[in-house]
Length: 295
Image (cartoon, rainbow, N blue to C red):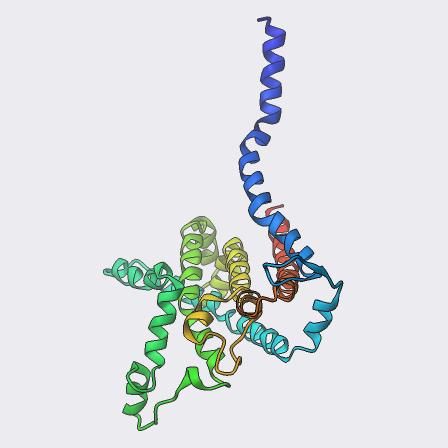
């Protein structure tokens, strides 16, 4: 083969190499993510029980959302999840700063803090359900020490959602802590030394030297926490199944309940589309911020 032809083939190989490597992932992403999104949007415009033929109803499922009090309860609870789960990056950062010290026995302490991250959320839900149990749970024992009557947190309409959010904070904080520990391992020590020479210490060192270098970890921690808060489902299904009286519903669980148990696939798909649009807004801003940071 002529040298000119070989060079031409090599150039083509280099030019199309990214396409070859990305193609399998893009095909799988299209089949399992993109296609279900468009399918859900299409189903949301129909009345369908999952078995019989679909009937076109236009925007009826979306208009029905505004007359559904459980939709507003779900939306309000999703906002609670979103706000209170923001504690996870803050507490995770504090724990990472504490665990990043070179102290004897710190590896053992670190492994204890990693523990919640490796537990399945269903197990976390069961652990906290036992913890909150007003008859046998550890919380009732602790309250009894101070002479306080046991509180049935998961049976109280006003407290159930917050009880589940606390359970969700446990593994999410551990995840954020691991992200920040990874970020702290990559902190430029020369910049830290330069800061010390300039007189920076304590809060000044953290604010002006450490935190700017942890910006990529912070963006990832916030993005994952926001997405996790909006698609919260496992803990609610395990701990209360949306109760008591639907007070702990969120959009994801409401969608599941309507589609699977009430056979309202169209209405469930409309809830899924609303949840997708809310998540898309947050994901857009976080991705934009991440791209701007990398530039």
